[in-house]
Structures are given as C-alpha cells and as structure tokens.
Image 1: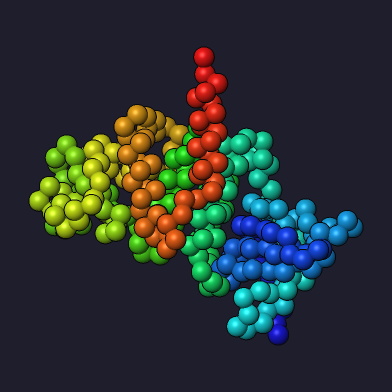
Image 2: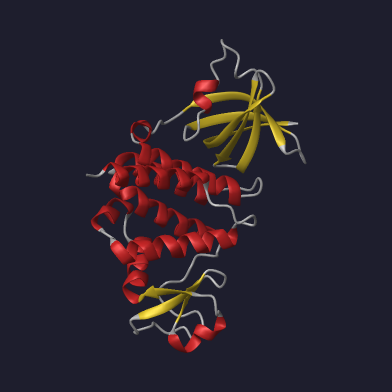
Length: 261
C-alpha cells in the first residue's frame, strides 16, 4: 500500500453509510479516482466543506492495487470558483462538465491534459458572463473528444476529405463528422447542418476561450449546434441517457420563457 498525493477536481460526491462520503475526483496525476472519506459527514469533521463538487483540492490517499475505492487520508482546499455558485446557469454548465467527465472516463489513468482542460473550462465559466457558458460547454465537449482522439470533424468531409461549399451538409454522430452531398450515402441517418453552422463550430474549437463571448449564435445555428453535439455525445454514452445537468438547464430556460411578458 502506497500513499499517493495529487491536485484534483471534485466531480461528484454521495453519502456512504451513516457518516462517510464517496467522493469522485479527477486527479492531475492519476485520472479519475473514487475516494472514501470516512467520517466526513460527522458534525465536527472539517473534510466535508472541501469535498464539494467543483472544488479544486489536493488529496492524499492510501492506494491499493485492483481496488475501485481508495481511502482518503488527507485533503487540502485549493482554488475556489466563487462566482459559479452565484449563478444558476453557471452552476448548470459547470456541473455538466463534471458529469460528462464522470460518465465517460472509466478508470484511473494519468490525466494532465484532461485535468488542464477541466480546470480552464471551470475557470472561464467562473470569470466570463453567464451568456458565454453554453459556448464554453460546446468548446469543452469538442476538446474533450479531441483528448481521446475522437473529436468531431467540422471542416472537411469525412468521406472525400474536401471542404464542402454547398449550402448544407450532413453531420454523422456515429462517424464523427460532416459529409458532403456526394458522400452522404455513408450514413443515411446523418442530420442536416447549414454550412454556416459548421464554420461556426470550427471557430468555437479554435478561438481563445476569452474571445468566445464575441460569437453570438442564435436561431437556427444555435439549435443545430445543440442538436449535433448532443447527438454526438449520446452516441458515445453507452446508456444513451441525457446529462441531468442539461435537463436542469433546460428547465431554467423554460422557466425564463414563461416569465417573459
């Protein structure tokens, strides 16, 4: 048994027994780790406040090979994204980031690149306006897939490699990219996207995070992007279940629409 220590981001936590917590973190040095925080729910415990989702912490744990759960021995609080907690939209998108990682990353593996992506995204959600959060989440989803070499292709046709010039193309969630008119037969279920939407998605992927608020996708483009990225990730998720965080965000948006005069 070896003591391991790493900076980590709390993805999720649930009660375990009467006094403990089961905490899932994404650790810079080890990837996704499930930790048992014994006694963390006792009234005098100081652990619980540091183990809130979205917190950046340093964890030390007793590592046992071939065990799904590891025993947390020490936790130190790190940076706190204070502004996220002040806005429900920010809470929703930040939670969606953590939920997606928790559902798609299966086990422990070194995760420097993904840790940096999660941290930068949460930091941007914290610092930028709530209006930018949806684009930040689109960007996160694209880069998340890029980390694993499965990022969707929006610039060139998957079939022939050419850059489409027609007004609309097809997007294949199963193949992971766009198809021009001549190659659309490769996936009869591919969805239609306007060429303008595919170019906007390329800009979302390439722009610096702090410049994303300059993009103003509205109407058809916004709906097409939502539909395409959601379909892409539902294909990646084995159970095909929507993210709970996105359902929460939809309820907020619907409530806002109902309140408009």
